[in-house]
Image (tube, rainbow, N blue to C red):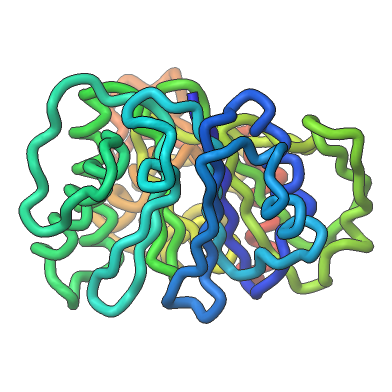
Amino acid sequence: MCELFGFSCNRSISIGFSWRGFLARGRVHRDGWGVAFYPDGRSICLIKEPNPSVNSTMASFLKSANFVRGKIVISHVRWASKGEVAYRNTHPFVRELFGREWVFAHNGTLIGKLPNPRFYEPIGETDSEKAFCLILDRLRELGRGASIYERVKCIEGAANEFAGYGGFNFLMSDGEHLYAFWSGYSSLYYIIRVPPHMGVVKLLDEDFEVDLSELKAEDEVATIIATRELTSEAWIRFPERRLMVFKDGLPYLSREQLTILKYVRSSSHRVSIRSISNGLGISIEETTVNILELKKMGMLKQDGRDRVPANHPDATFYTNPDLRSTIDRILNYLKI
């Protein structure tokens, strides 16, 4: 099994601490390592080797020099299941689309024969790179002017289709958004760090710790994604078969979704779609669409006592207890 690491931030910073713990997992995942980041927000700096990260002079230098720096970073340690141990089969993979370089890394094994891509072609033999090419084919057909919501629908549709072939957890980015998907295979977690930054955080894979108040800037917001928890913090499991999108260090939510989230969070008890619609002056239809999106993300839960489906005006919801502290910090930071 391979492992994934993703990072999204509201400013270009070094990822030395968290990435240090991730690279230590090359003790087990010894068939290659790689890291991709956006120095200018559009083009990729890609560094990878078909060797264990723990034995790599390059990886040691990158950690010590704090060279890996950006608003978005994707990294991978490989345990080969398809394709020989070679540079061409080492993640992440990169392709250009509409003037931006897209990067992709995958965890899992796809069983069976995927269709052949029409425009993008794999260079190596992995199922991962082939799936990446197929997703980019679909985005290319969607067109240059597609909205973020159209792209999300396209990527999520392909992801759920390919998840039918086996484990399909992945991280993907165009330099502006970080896309993450957990197919239900193995695991995928994230942690959001929002000011004020306080407390000592320990790595789980090394005897190393930092004080966040000394490490983080006062206005720094970041999300870290990993196959398994990297630190002693309270990590959140990804929703299954739901594409999550992150931008500038936070989950990508519309203003209406944030307003609804605040309304539900400030309620002392479960609240219905009808009540939210009336209270915020948003139509039932728009409220329902946004509630269902927040439910898919795992931020809202439907009350188990309801006798109506989730899209019914009388369906009632409350914020996920496991995410309430994170939700509070996001809302406070954004001043919603």
